[in-house]
Image 1 (spheres, rainbow, N blue to C red):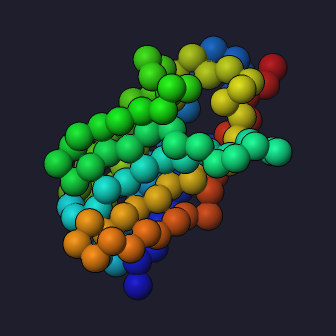
Image 2: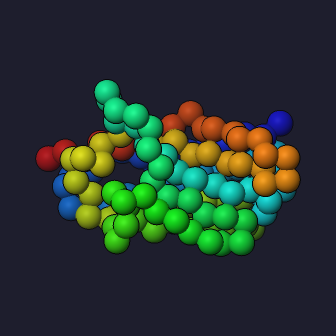
Image 3: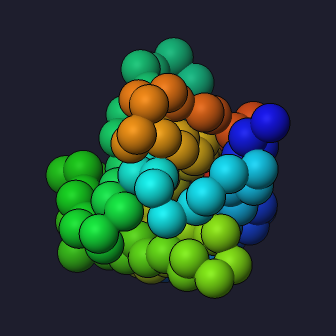
Length: 117
């Protein structure tokens, strides 16, 4: 049974930073492409950043230059370092893990990020 668990969300002031973590358990982590998405109230879910099993990264326009995605295969974890946060970054952040062998997606429950003074 594959489980995806996000953590690290919270309340931060504008200009601040947060680091989100996504732990994928129950399977061989190295075969997963992992992506972060976010959904703000009344808006569609959007891609924030992704990292492949070979460490190739991609970012959504809102994340470029401010967020960094990385992975630690020894810890089955993907990190999303978010800097220079602004109120528009307020959303629930979701982690998706895609098994690249069989093409199945697994989603976490999400972690709330609120940027407010």
